[in-house]
Image (cartoon, rainbow over all chains, first blue to last red; front, top):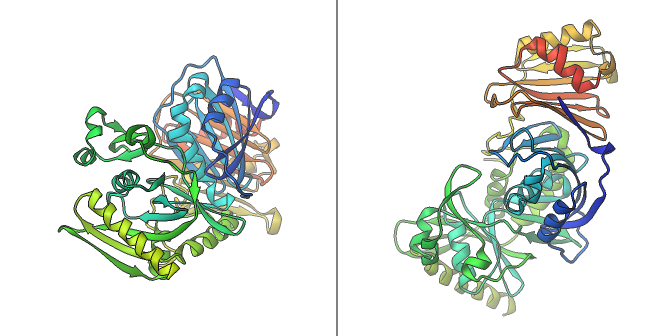
Amino acid sequence: MSSVSIDQTVLSYNRELCFAGAHCKLRTNSQELANVLELLSIQTSGSGSSRFDIRIVVNELSGASAQQPHFRGLHHVVTASFGSANVFVFDILRRTISATISGVVARNSQFWKEKLIPIALGVLGAAMGMVPMHCACLESENDGLLIAGVSGAGKSTLSVALAQGGFNYVSDDWTYMSQCDGRLVAYGTSAPVKLLPDAVNHFKVLQSRSLQTSMNGELAYEVDIVETFGAQAERGCEPRWLIFLERMPYHGGEFTSMSSTAARNYLYSSVERLPVQLSEAVEMRKRIIEKVSQLPSWRFRYGGTPQFATEQLREFVAHRRQEVYA
Amino acid sequence: MTAETSWHPDLLRRFVATPYVFCSGTGKKQRCIQSNDLGVALSIRRSCIAQRFNGGSDVLLWKLIRDSAAPEDDAQILTISDGVLRTLHLGTGTVLIYDRERAEVLGFISAAVKTQQLSSSLIPSLLGL
């Protein structure tokens, strides 16, 4: 039996980090891990109240790499094991992550960027007044555009096309909504864009990339949007519009106004159920969902290429702005 | 669909029904054992009655899920203590959590773990006995 007593281990390396607008106090015994996470940290302006603690003991004697994740949760505690040597314990009520990991995982920047940081924000988010929402987010001239839709609707493909068409990229799959100084703010992480295999038909640059098995078992291209497509990335923005994306079998595009009730129902359907022990988090989440559902919402049905949809959305945004300034 | 319902799947198995419930005492001193496995619930109840968990006698809630979907990999035991939380991991399939402040023991037990091993070895290790 091996035992790790985190509170009795000297954790000499401390860092104040920021992920998707959430402040994180890291304590670890590994300088290398502290440096890896510092490079992934994105400082944001504003005084967001989202914060959590993370304490990690790195076992340099272990060479175990991260295996397929195994998640379980009861009441206020969630555990994530990436093999038996890499274990994370999330205490949602106390907003704390305790972990013991191998030196190999500590140095694996990709693991933190693509897996652990998004997981941490997803698990602890609700308790920190941050709601992970299944939608993409693009920004143009300080106006944020949230694009929701069921899996396979083409959010990521459209996000890339929009980023190539002049929008700034915030996120393609999960967007973290919180309030900062009373304003609704949407943040992304530095997670890669996940594009399904048919995206190669729209973006030739993917021909030189290979498909990978993502965390949910899907085959996909996982690429850095800035490096691969030369896109401009934004850390966060204030969302102005909420678009529900739907594909249609024939060429064309149409926008239909949606009620806040329909928007609210969709948003609730995409968040996870929380246990009664987290009733305070449920209330906080309700307030943010209410605020998001009050954004002007449209259903955008389109058929055609993502480049065609980009043109449609550009015109849509221009019209909305004209209405505001008229 | 209403605001109260969701089609998000229960990936963490947080909402597995625990029909086997034993409670004793009343009010703040009430102790409850909940499980989806009668053998597990009875084993914990017997151990509590026999006061086998002396150091853990303050536990007010036991919620233990027999997890048939859990992987049965290596049998290495790892305990992690941090503040009021102590967790015990047997491979990746069995995880037990002791929250000292809330006086709760929660956990998932893989199919390979016998109730005897649970009550005589794993729980005493978790409670630090």
